[in-house]
Image (tube, rainbow, N blue to C red; front, side, top):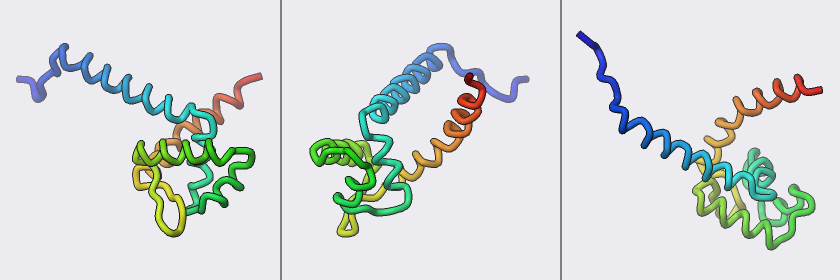
Length: 112
């Protein structure tokens, strides 16, 4: 007698397809110029627009406004009187990046 039921073959591709679509959407978001830099600069806490622009270096105000709007729309950013801060989902993203960072460091060390 089996202790578990096997998933149907029709359910698996659908879930795989959903995962593929979710990963592609996230990678598309992160691939946008300055996006990861903005997330990185907010890792320590809230920053005002000017402080964030200064921390990012050469980012234009127009691009920063666009990235902040995209991060808000994605649910990764909150804002209040103290400035911009990562939402709980944004903080979760930083945690999710840790294993990828470790892998990337190992990978980079093996490259000539």
